Image (cartoon, rainbow, N blue to C red; front, top):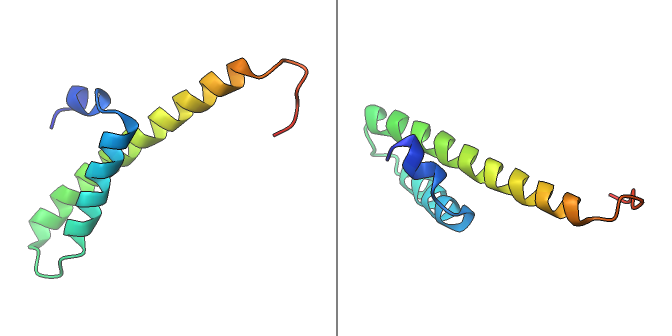
Length: 71
């Protein structure tokens, strides 16, 4: 999956794919090359999730009244 395809995923889609990667990585019979490839894919999916969460957090912060300093 290309970087552009990953960025077009919703948070839920990326999280589901990340969960699947983690499940596959738990297979102890998986060849090392496949593990490395899955790990890299998982890193990219985790980054997408983090970016989506940061975007949602920023949107919520923008809605918070400016005088509200509670965190």
